[in-house]
Image 1 (cartoon, rainbow, N blue to C red):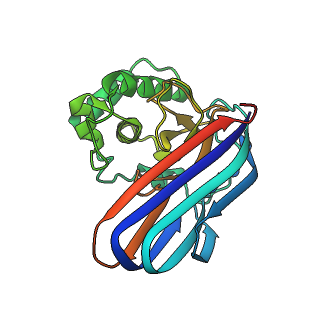
Image 2: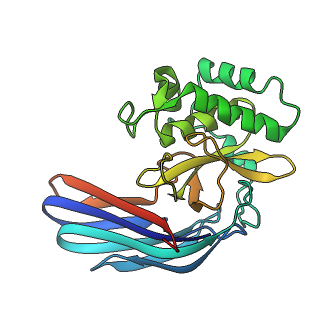
Length: 268
């Protein structure tokens, strides 16, 4: 499938600030499931700095805008050709060993409830892949997709206790549950082409390390493994570590954020 993406992120400041420095993870991953035929990241007035591919295989660039600044706009446009690999991250080059993703964070630190859910969900599994699918389904059943019940600071254990959340919460909970079973798991960010499905400004899902297959994606919010409707951008230990844009600003005042994402099939 050919998917077109337009992603605009606008930062507005109530009074001019001196400088904004950002770390950008906005370029599609390179693996057999997708090829970016066109891709552009535009930030008016910016000076682009260092660029590198990190150990997880993500392309990252820095950007600096000097002031006085009252607005910074980051616009991503491009086309990606995608292939359904049933969630398997085939052909992705990275240097970080899977065991590194057994490390927990504040968002993915499991509690007793998550450990019990993981143990119960996988008790009858006859293979690592079946266990991973059963675990993702259990998270989907335990946390109903309910916008507004959680926020960006909600942890996996808090989302499970509420029984409600969004894709970020599903992903954090699946990672935490997997790690209680000594299954390496990580947070993935990207885009989703969907009509009537669960899709937000940007989408999140988890990848679990499955012996014999490698990294396999699971999207408990939608109850599927990523297919040709998904564009993978990057990964991390949690939502903060995998954020598409991270930055710091110099100056007083408050900031307003506006995000608009459109993903469509090329023939639409």
